[in-house]
Image (cartoon, rainbow, N blue to C red; front, side, top):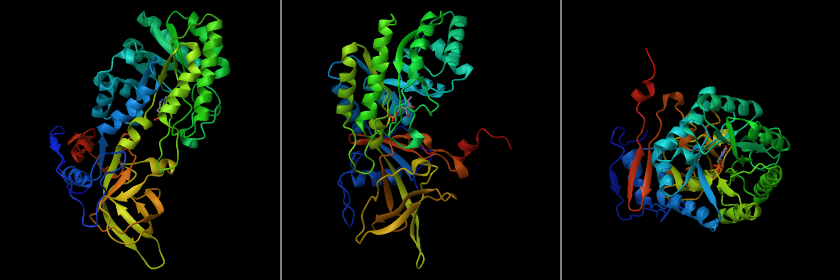
Length: 436
Ligand SMILES: Cc1ncc(COP(=O)(O)O)c(C=O)c1O
């Protein structure tokens, strides 16, 4: 870990000082995160590295784009907390009018703590424990997204025992290829998620007949980091057709939850325009008159975050690769090791000199601990700060403490101010659960 203050209160606001360009000229702006070189240098010095930095303005703008594209059509944007559930980020989205999508009971509780009412929370999870079902039912959430006939039974029983009717939505699996990374595709028959869409009408009839269940919606989520509109449109059309058939049978739903999944451009290649995506969902649903719910995560917070890291070593031997070793690795950012994910990486202040191919690696004793391989990169020296872009989603949330590495701090920039919204974990905190 490089410098920084580990134990300061997380709340004080720091004001950004005027721009100062680096010796060889820094960036004016880091795209996505609307911060200047000097601002990020200040943050790296004060909070230490590795350190996540988010831009509140970028999150607001992404939310506003989605919201506006509904054009008055009845909708709810349920921010998927799994992308980034740091309290200040969740509170920010709550303040914008978002609703919440939780994928665990922990996330349900974070949502409630950040101000969401139970009637604004949908709860999804492929394997809900008895305790999770009990609590979800007792909270009276907007919808528990049901994943199987067995789970339907268990929710019904717990609701009857509590003397309530649980609002449920059936998660259907439409057998549509999201054409994303196989590890984040969820809408194929071979995936563990939801019930085959052909089985859905019978299960809706079953739910309608149960004393403890109130079927309010249909839910579909076919994967994440989806970069073409076609699979998302097809999934939407499939649940709209299902709702139409159900209506014919007298089962009237209240909402269609189209899930999340919209991708962002990590490498500059084209992706679906978020407004076009929303318009496609509205076009598919309008005839039904049903409310549309979506569960976006990545598109709201992904581009709004960077990871600041410091070069701790540069090494090259004759005839061998050149390695840039950072103080951040797979413990702070799992995505490259987990999905071979690409992130743009650049020095905060560019030194003069030509780019050369390098491997940009972390300090963890695992060969998969690399952020980039054979990437053309400008010259750097030990102590230089490096910016890893588009890490606002599935970054800090997936952080872990392998090698007894404490979790890094997170900073939120808002206008001219920034503040630490999670301070760096201390080793004592990391060990606090253990006995000697
Ligand atoms: C059920 C559910 N909803 C929403 C999301 C959010 O997806 P994304 O961040 O790709 O928008 C996920 C993530 O895969 C999910 O599993």
